[in-house]
Image 1 (cartoon, rainbow, N blue to C red):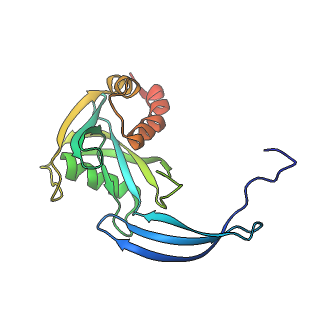
Image 2 (spheres, rainbow, N blue to C red; image 1 turned 180 degrees about the horizontal axis):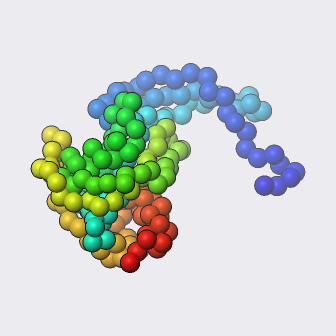
Length: 189
């Protein structure tokens, strides 16, 4: 940081108004005031619940992947399992639940690897990354009403190479792999 400039100022939050409430997020107009410029502005903020993405590692060192149609891109996306946290639910519990519901897999040694803000410019939530080891197919899938998911497993090194080659384009999945790769380098056979 430049010593002659103290850095950006923290804007003061004045008020919020909900513009719309949907099944997956609230849309708010939030008024902020800049402390030094006497400027007030309304900013649009999306308030979804926190999300969890799951890196499910099988005993033979493969990652569980899901492919599904994504309405935002009007196309298919290769991802890791994940979903929205329920009120009061912890990230690891959400990860285990989403893994089971989307894929039918269950595992052990579930732990939080890290968390990110998906888009802090306009979103208030966090996405948490959970590692589940010894993941095996254990139950039937329990999809949400609009879900239709193809489940595959691929060796970790192939998934990492696929991500680097542009075969995985979901930004939060790439973040999860970023958190996982150094751990994988220590644990791989």
